[in-house]
Image (cartoon, rainbow, N blue to C red; front, side, top):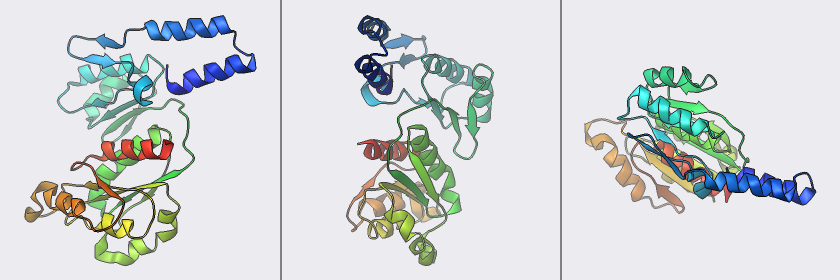
Length: 251
């Protein structure tokens, strides 16, 4: 059971719509379910949603399409939302053959199955410096959306044309938390953080020429930001940024 389902059950008992013994049976049934399911090649953590509010997310890298599909079926079988990151089209085909309602977001390389979750009241803005950063930005946006957040995208507003991000001031100021994705020198998070009074999660990307060192230059630039309120995740880690933004927005 998810935290939202537990809360709904408690509210049902309080309102008299659910009998106490029925609620007890439901809760005990959920608690008796094995905390993880051993598939041999993977141990699926079914209690992740209870501990963290969202079920286990599948990293598609290094897994075969058949392995991804098997794990996905076990997660979705608990009436949970599903997110597979860094997934190929072949992996999606394998999952869709067993779960008809899944979606594939090709730019983000994400497989998604939507299920109702409590929605946060605030808005998460995902901003990208350039079009080349969109795969990582979309991974962050899709992650945050699936975790129950309203997401606004502000794309291609890098510092090479500073007027583009300045034109988005009202949108940025209305956000509860902002994810900023940038490669090259990684300057955009500092600019955005200097304009707002909300947390900025900076995501360095591996976009750039040779001296960017696969995103290390952007990472170091973001870590050395002189603006207040900037936190940095790993290179190309859109999922991590979207998840962190969701935790802040739901707090």
